[in-house]
Length: 177
Image (cartoon, rainbow, N blue to C red):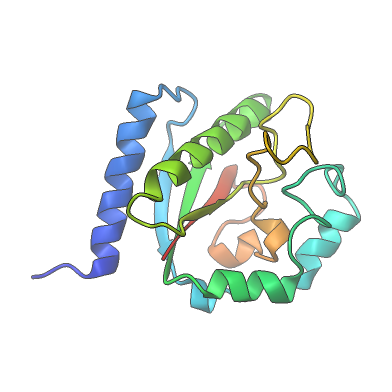
């Protein structure tokens, strides 16, 4: 049976992720899953942005978060302009390792995006939570900033992706043309 273009893209992405995890020695990223999602079926929820505005310490302080990311209508146009998307979900065991793992995932996503643009010039990633790449945020110094929007800042509800609060998954998105 012949594989579809999406199945081939998933296999190619899985191989690249595995190769980079070994090559770049991301020791904390161990237990992960990759799931295909259809970006055209994403239903964005304005309440995720309100949760950012009222309750998140990153609001207005990180480039990955509101008000520095597009509004919901623009985010929806952006997300739906992609043909395929993949969840990159990494399991964490304890909240003690959460922040170090999150930072490592964010570094890894920037690396992955950089490698993917060779085959997918419009490849783009969304971070699990607000950006923590730098110990102290250098935003608005755009030349050094590698932040990507947080999944929830784009209006995506993690629960709509099949992940419940308390499941201990750090969820990011990899978008391909």
